[in-house]
Amino acid sequence: MVTLAIDPGPTACGAVLYDPAARRVLWSSKAASVSSLCRGIGTVVAPWGVSGVSPSLVLIERVQSYGIAGASLLLTSESVGRLWQACQASGVPHLLVPRRLVCTSLDVSGGGEDAQVRRACIDRVGAPGLKRAPGATYGVTSHAWQALGLAVAYHEAPLTLRARMDEEGAT
Image (cartoon, rainbow, N blue to C red; front, top):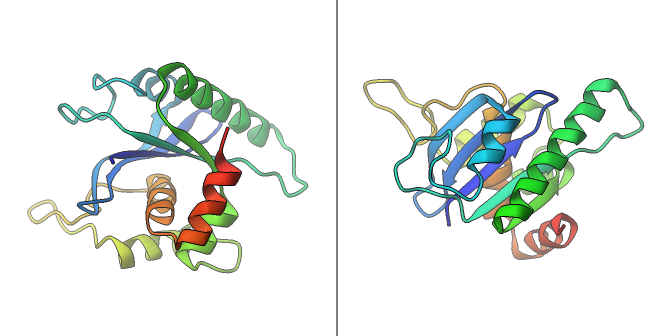
């Protein structure tokens, strides 16, 4: 079950195409445009350029305000809406997963800072490695780590937590 995981942003998203069976990142982008991701959902002709690979599940980090409602948050929620709509139109199964459940699954505390999520991904999937000897997370940078954290958290969550993700993420 190849998974496209997306950390949405107001104009660009962190995104990874992750194979949980192989525990390997197939493609990543720290700044994928919302438009290209929307066009790519449900088709093998997509921005990730991995021949013949189409995601069978899309995970999108759900935006939560915690009392802060700035322009960036509102624009990000619009991006989430566009991605959700593209998933609906393509018929690809999808979930909107709250970050707090991602952090719980990754056993990350203290608000789930980005560096903690990155460390948890490396601990579970493997180090990036080098160009001459790429590791399982080679090429993952910046916001793509948050997207990978979402994929890893979902696929490696204990059954009770995964059920909560499925329940809260259902759209």
